[in-house]
Image (cartoon, rainbow, N blue to C red; front, side, top):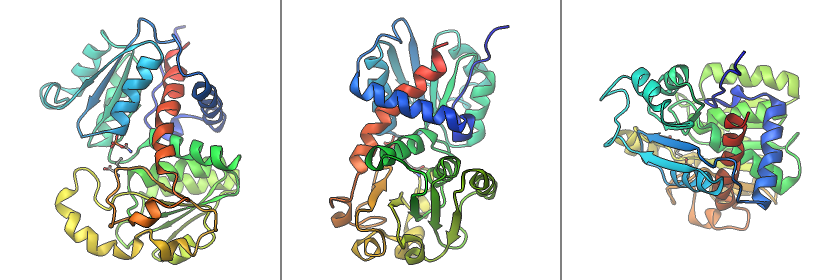
Length: 306
Ligand code: CP
Ligand code: NVA
């Protein structure tokens, strides 16, 4: 029986043991950057939205593994518009060994995964950003040695990044407190998943409208933009609604002294995070960004190497 191909569309596609395996491989790859595991392999990045970190880190990562990578924007491919996702998936599978897709609707990346004969990695959808969350928690592990029992406090929009963080923290036994305004809470099904995982791992999940309550005693303070890609027209309205969820010096005062300040980037300085906090010694935002490269190499190797 041929081995069924695996996708990485959501954190829950990996078991706890597999996540730990990816972290171990990441540590190894960080020390030994250049490999030839992707010699004679081609990777395609199919992006419907802009990207700096995801695009560059995948492209450099494939190159460091000895493979070829190409990046296709909507102007070139326009997946789901110029032709169906199903036909594009089947065609791309004849050329590529791995697909990384950044889409608007989560079901589009799921559909790609269903029809592609090669592994598909979610490079961000409206529901999840799993590569980001893996890199983030790897960064916490790197800084603190272990993540179990630590508390990550997320302030802002209950969005794709928040959903993926809820999944991974709960699976790994890390507590998560989410502070967001009414109407901007994380996806209910994801919260249900996190609560169920938390019962197994010992993690607690709290959602509150109070940013100070969430920040209290935090080991990690995390935020993301208030208006995600595709929500630009709501930006001014959201800026008012989210104002009190800004990570600033006052909020930092509620957290542990050695709190790690995290942001997936791009950041809107002066909005969800102030300059002084973003540039403070507590901030590890560029370590997170760097770890995208190392973690994604480990994910690609896991999916492609048999
Ligand atoms: N954090 C992140 O995914 O950044 P990009 O949108 O620049 O890829
Ligand atoms: N929530 C943001 C993350 C960007 C990396 C967005 O979807 O635009």
